[in-house]
Amino acid sequence: MSITVYVPCDSGAVSLGADQVAAAMAQQALARGLDIKLIRNGSRGMYWLEPLVDVSTPQGRIAYGPVQAGDVASLFDADFLNGGNHPLHLGLTENIDYFKRQQRLTFARVGITNPISLDDYLAYDGYKGLNNALALSPADIVKAVTDSGLRGRGGAAFPTGIKWNTVLNTPSATKYIVCNADEGDSGTFSDRMVMEGDPFVLIEGMTIAGIAVGATQGYIYLRVEYPHAHKALNSAIKKAYEAGYLGEDILGSGKTFHLEVRLGAGAYVCGEETSLMESLEGKRGLVRFKPPLPAIKGLFEQPTVVNNVISLASVPIILTKGGDYYRDFGMGRSRGTLPLQLAGNLKHTGLVEVAFGLTLRELLYDFGGGSATGKPIKAVQVGGPLGAFLPASQFDTPLDYEAFAAIWAVLGHGGVVAFDDSVDMAAMARYSMEFCALESCGKCTPCRIGSTRGYEVIDEIMQGQALDKNIPLLRSLCDTLLNGSLCALGGMTPYPVLSALNHFPEDFGLETANAN
Image (cartoon, rainbow, N blue to C red):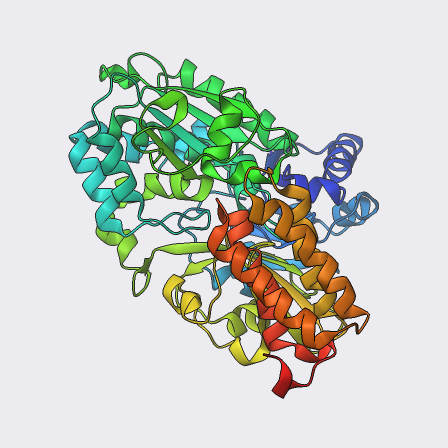
């Protein structure tokens, strides 16, 4: 009887040698005359332990990591196929502290199944949500999503049910579902992990969305830097068509939904929904004026649902277990769970899916283990390159959309990048302005010109030139960007710049009392 061994195919694990580990496993088993079944799974999200190898035993799946190809022979010598002791032995995977304290809803299957096996997906509750949705009216599907409290997981946190309801009630012969998979924020990788580790959940979520609002065509707008996700999605889409989960007559219901992947071309601004739609239409990725809203006049001027990967991947569990089940996680108006991505100067980087309400401090220290260097954590940027820099005095803020808004910060896509006390926050503010200048689509003057003037002014500040003039000028520029930009690229660049200036004035050559 063969023993099942799991080696991740996740691109994060692959970059650390997972392919070589898998090849060495197969070679060693063959040389020793052992029968193993080698499955490439997704990552559990504990990247400091990757490549993480799982072995199925009667006691459960036992983990070993981080495994390199050179470790494989010694693992076989130690009888790891039966859970044998070894320096890389981590015990039951489910009992690893970092993992067992999570609340995995959206990521329930990631790291457990073969990502492109439809049989695996079905064995772990896959397509139950779609089956339930097919028995409901479109309005009832939208109501379930509305009742769940699900909000956009891409940044703006707009209630998903309201967006779907608008598209449902906008008359049109043609409607679209667009998945924004242009995951460009620094320190974010949850979208990639879902697409590589459980692509069927995104496909199912988009299919449910199409049935809910009357859309028959969907597009996944995928960032070109994700070739592993591209391959996994196309393989899963092909299998979904073959099994009747996509196409003209889904599961004999008479409902139609078609889906395909389109690749972006590397522009950060195409993460903004209207710029994304321009790109999908084959045009230059320029931001559109609003109104009209995409829900009324979106892709090809038709009503369009544009949702992030995590938003759509959360839909199947809502339709499987009900809106109330999902809503019971979280706090305030932030319901359900949020996949948080720990990056930067932390001991334990990776993905953490928990209900809203955990504090930033608990995330950084209980999960992240503190800084990798052992130095104090000076600042944390939450919400990507346009997110505010938070000082230690704000680490007790709960992870909640409204709580973050109250301190002039954003949760965004859930990216968390930590910096120890060696960081120069004036340099980080300059980087934010330069990033905006480089990635601006150029359509509006505040973003196009203001960002360039911004990093020029910060250059002068960093050289100690005319602080009494340049500090007010920088604040004035930020005010113009904040209130005059066409989209969030220019409109949010002041968040990291002003938070760095307000919380770390000493890095700008200022005394605290003179920071304003």
